[in-house]
Image (cartoon, rainbow, N blue to C red; front, side, top):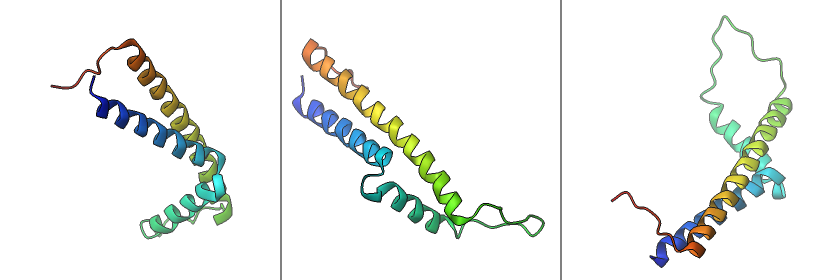
Length: 102
């Protein structure tokens, strides 16, 4: 079995799991920071047509909603990374090769 492919897969699984855990737990405010930066970047894209009113939710309420959504996405990323790590460990211990597209 090719060692570099296994190591790259293990590193990718760990990175996905750690990023998901950081988002899910709001580690050092990373989730809120990311949401605020995303909203600031996307604010130039947000145009309200003249026939509509601005949304009634305040900026803090919108940030809170997006933080909650991003924390849920972080939980999904963490679960996905752990699941792929389990599959990788099974493949290593069973000796089954990883199928390539070639």
